[in-house]
Length: 188
Length: 152
Image (cartoon, rainbow over all chains, first blue to last red; front, side, top):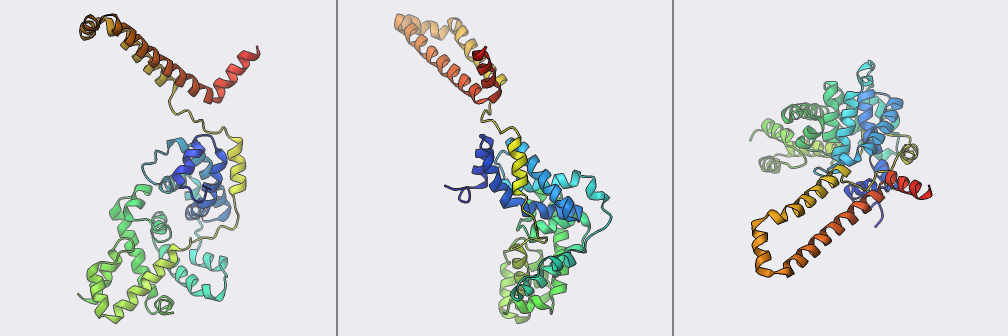
């Protein structure tokens, strides 16, 4: 059985048993997700890359604390979220990046992806209107496909708080999408 | 159900599940059907990607740091716990002569019981010591100390 077929929990077990090499598949699988959490806190790539390194080193050191009660990805997301919260650097950053513009400048794919990018731009624009500390919750909901309860478990915010912010984001998204490309997109 | 409350109900739903009442309304209302489908498409597209694109692959540099760190040890039971268990086993053996039930069984079975109990506890202690030694040998520090002792 290769690493791709194994569950995260099996791989973690092997790493805990001394096979440190196996940790690379965890890094490859989740580095982008952790990078995105970092971007929400630091708003710049360099700090987000440092954040990714820091989170994975911490994860490796604390791996024995993973009890397997919840899936590994929740454990890692919680670790990353707490690392972001605890970092004072995150609050020192005064300049906020316009997510939508950032995305537009990063992704210049084939024409077929244009509509997808438009939809994502609208969504990111809606998220950017939310209070900063809750944006990562909305990211967890829309991009990481987590439920309200799972987000609450990771962030420690109450389910009702998360619900209300996600509802705000959904309303923004709905208002932005009305009569725009997304409504046409599903017809294509 | 009015179109506004249908949309509101859809927006309040958790995850991808659309409430039945919303589905029923959608079946009869082309406008809501189009709007909700548009929302579902948008939310579905978001799930296929991440908001920010990671341009560098950090797995190499992270693994370089990880490999320089001490690997996790397979030993999961601390030495203190092993000593505590050993103490409990020893205490159990020492208290046997003071147990009245054991005394009755000994009278009833004669000398055979003494042989039996000696063999059972002998096995217990052998298994315990073997497991304890094996677990310590997995610990790098302990094996280094043993190797050092052998060399000297």
